[in-house]
Image (cartoon, rainbow, N blue to C red; front, top):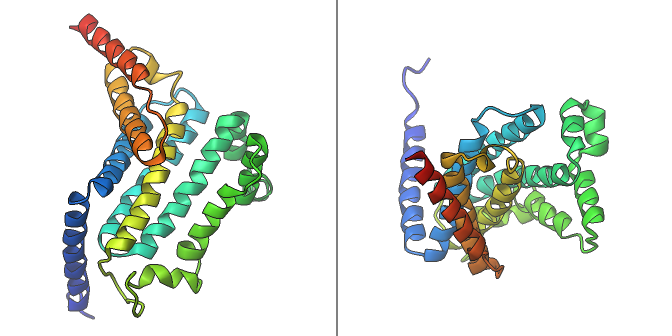
Length: 266
């Protein structure tokens, strides 16, 4: 039996570390990419703070546990992305998307949280399978374009399932052969990071909505600071990259409330 880890495993790690250095340099030199990472970090920080708090009931604890899973997805996805594994990074985003849609379902039908939690395998497949959740949301929202299904299919075909299309994320955008192992490619880095940021904005908004009537609206200074930081980062990002107006008047109101709370505690 070998007494040491094979040298090739260390060489692989060294290659990943070198690619991560290139990735970080590319991100820090591009304001757009850096904005995406700032949004992802703010969302993860928000989840980390509220998922660790005492839940008011089992429904909220369910949301917290799903939040912990999403946090891990973002952490793993970002790590794989910056180390040059673009297909693997994108595959983690499908899991995040499934949870985003599940949270959207719960947001529109809160009683479903308990039903999902207590369901057996057959019930989960009959009611909460990803395709069933997307159909409910599209019907509820009156959407007929099937955009949720198209987005989900993209992650399935290009990342999660073994398909011919999936090789796109395993070869340089400039063309050439599929690369076995990690490699650096600015185009793939941008593409996957953009999708990660789009999901981060949705994650933060939905996760936050399940706590609006508890900690952060209960004169909790630290909770309000964490919530407001994510809200501002998300609003400014959405205004810049999605064209959605950021409600600065509301932010000013919340900032004043925060200052008043701090003054009362001083």
